[in-house]
Length: 190
Image (cartoon, rainbow, N blue to C red; front, side, top):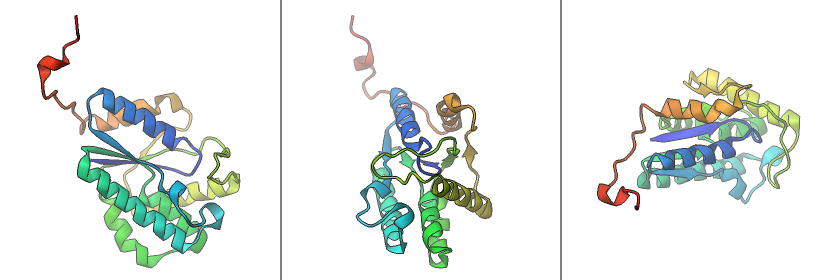
């Protein structure tokens, strides 16, 4: 099973990913995080990005997801190919040659969770702090969600304290606790 948190930069996707991973681990779910790929890109990102950089990011995102899926029951992605693609759209415009692969890859996510734009970006050593750029990526993402007819869990803007609960509720039908292999070893010590 694969879940991706999507949204523009600086809105708390990474923080929410770690919260969800911890909650899932407490339920004995075998979960792996796919961290934000762009932070490892050797080429320009943010407003200086180009097709080569975004191609590296998209291919690496897919490779990391495949690797995680091969080894774990649930893969939790800090971004998806869609929001990474929006940075390419911003920099280079429509990319028809990417469309077939993106459409196919988007069907591999069991759940897409849209984290809303609720705060301006702050400098973290990597991501751009320009509010206009942050908003442009968010708007492109919303347009792509609509254009592609994607089913997305949109987290409520003004209820951040409930975001983790809402995602866990959406996961409940899919995620059952894995029973312990050796139940007698799971008993608390006297």
